[in-house]
Amino acid sequence: MHLAYPAVLSALLFCTGLYGVLARRNAILVLMSVELMLNAVNLNLVAFDVWLSKTAQDTLHSGQALTLFTIAIAAAEIGIGLAIVLAVHRNRGTADIDKLRDTAEHGDDDDPHDDSDGDSETARSEPAEKAEATA
Image (spheres, rainbow, N blue to C red):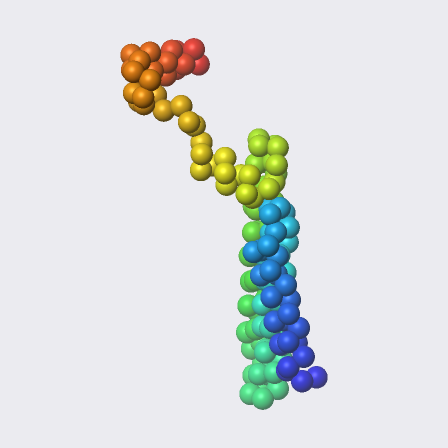
C-alpha cells in the first residue's frame, strides 16, 4: 500500500477533529474531537513507521512505540477530562462551553468594597457576618 493513502486519511481525520474542537459547544463532543485528532496522529505514526522500516531495514519500530505512548496519554486525558466535565455538569447543570465561560468571567457582581451606593459601612460588615454564620 502506498504512503499517500493513510496520510490523506490521517489529514482528513485530523481536520474533522479540528473542526469539531472549534465548532462544537458541548464539552463531551470537544473531548471526542480531540480523541479523533490523536487517532489521526497515531495513524500517521504507524504509516510512516511501516514506510521507514521498509526503506531502512530498521527493526526498532519507534513509530509504533510512540503510538502506544500516545494511546496511554489519550486514555489519561479522556479519563481526567470526562471527570472534570461530569463534576462541572453536576455543579452547573450544563456542559455547554459558552455558558460555563460566561459564568466564570462574570462571577460575583457584589463587590464588598464597592462604594457606589454610598453605604460603605454595611457593605464591609456583610462579609464578616457571612464568615461568622459559616464558622
